[in-house]
Amino acid sequence: MTDRVDRLRSATHRFLRAFGVLETAHTPCGLPLALSDAHALQHLVSTREKPTVTELGRVLGIDKSNATRLCQRLARRELVVLTPCDLDGRAKRVSLTREGARLARRVSRASRDRFAQLLAGIPAAKRAQVLESLDLLHESLLSWTPSDD
Image (cartoon, rainbow, N blue to C red; front, side):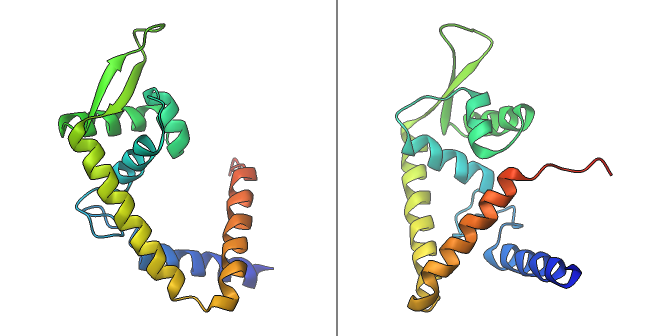
């Protein structure tokens, strides 16, 4: 079992590093943007809703304080606008500016192109297997609970 655990860990680390997720100055697609910013913009452009900062954080899998910092950073760059919620003035809704929507569409295109290249590098007969494996890893992550060690 230990060999398989080490193999999964090593394979995952190699993949993440090769894909470029550790790079902070640009996305794996090469755009000059932090990965968390790119994910936030892509979510915002893909939905008609104007989520609260907390809701956006939940979608991105980050806590409220990190979501707040991310949204403030995007607001300083004039990519999003934060407006008080009607029912709870303490909560802020996040919406894209015109420039933010333009950048979000650019990020989405670059991401789609990058994943198309990645998929093209996988033999056609193995693509379904790779996608199924990624789904299984995702399900496993969702069911994971950290230990108290």
